[in-house]
Image 1 (cartoon, rainbow, N blue to C red):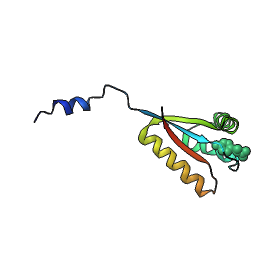
Image 2: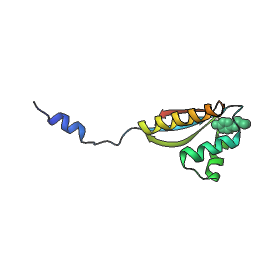
Image 3: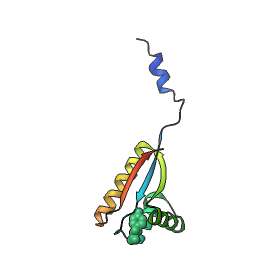
Image 4: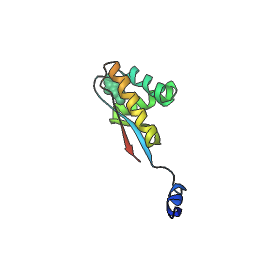
Length: 97
Ligand code: TYC
């Protein structure tokens, strides 16, 4: 019938909600592996990736990137799968901003 409300909802007035993707520290994943993950999945260069890895190592967690929900969920899945394939316990999570 009256489609005007549905049409209005389709007209985005707010930016999409964003999610932080974070990696967590653990005692077993090699530092080099974490640096490689940050380069491979988050487009960081070696220097940026090393800085983020060391922050996670000393502070417990660090932000890898900020994305819309579906992209963030896909990054988390890819990192978890990759870490498991290499038998590392590296944890990756997303958190609403
Ligand atoms: N703490 C790990 C070590 O000493 C290195 C590490 C850094 C692991 C960051 C996970 O997200 C991580 N080998």
